[in-house]
Length: 213
Image (cartoon, rainbow, N blue to C red):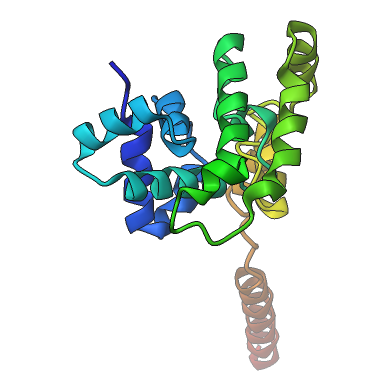
């Protein structure tokens, strides 16, 4: 049975676009293959999706396409995410996702969606480049080694300032502990001044008493 989690999330994001930012920085949900099949206009997938969600085919394809544009093809996403995959996704599924995305971009498929208003062919180059990174075991291994570690860059859309703070935390906490140490208390000069003033007063009284002798 197909997992509808990704498609349900796509429907939610379509209704609440402010959730896009959170979706971009989160792991991809299960059921990405099913979502891509819906976006590509697969007849069997659309039929099952309508039964599972009670939505029309046009609304489902629109939601799936919006999810692809805003989450998978967002700026600075890595090749895995562009293809709707994870680092542990089997190679066969990665190939399947690439084919479905290219089918989604095909003008004949896009024309079936009445709400289509933009030329999605501009995404074809990103999809083909991502596939070139992951098409073989050797290239996939080389790409994995070239990727920044997740402990340094938590997600590719992080701002430079956030990335810098994350890098500092990853390198160690010595600087953080030093900055968080208690500030050194300033010694008050009042007691010293008071002692000097008191000593001068005693000397003055001593000299005064000697004068009366």
